[in-house]
Image 1: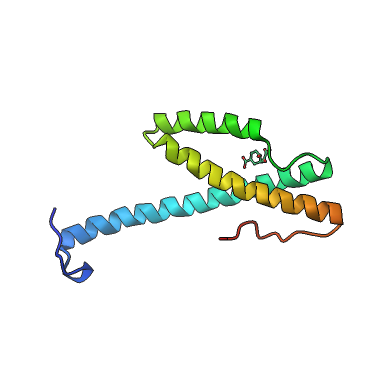
Image 2 (image 1 turned 45 degrees about the horizontal axis):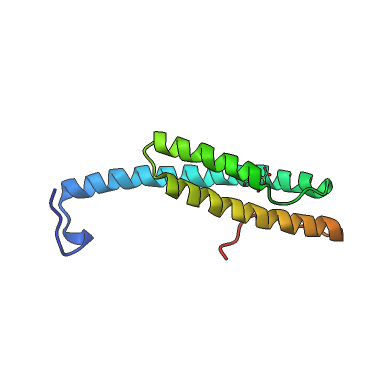
Length: 121
Ligand SMILES: C=C(O[C@@H]1C=C(C(=O)O)C=C[C@H]1O)C(=O)O
């Protein structure tokens, strides 16, 4: 497979076609990831409200340890780097815990929380 060094304009049409095909697939996968994350955050928001209503702590390290062990095994079986899978889960869980802390504060203060679940900070 050869490509022009001049950038996308000079690309071989067959290469262009293959690149477009692969990128379409990537776009579909990215859309699925966004939708799955949105569903996951909907569920974790509900967990956050349940915990706040019953004075349970925002984080559950034992549960997280079980999830990490499970995800690492799933990653290995799927030929995905288990260290990456663990890092990715930790990134999401940290955000969830932040939401749970916010929900707990709002519940304790009798205020409401924003329904936009994630920020990029
Ligand atoms: C969602 C929960 O709260 C936190 C977030 C978790 C997650 O995002 O999977 C897991 C454990 C908790 O630290 C939970 O306790 O189930």
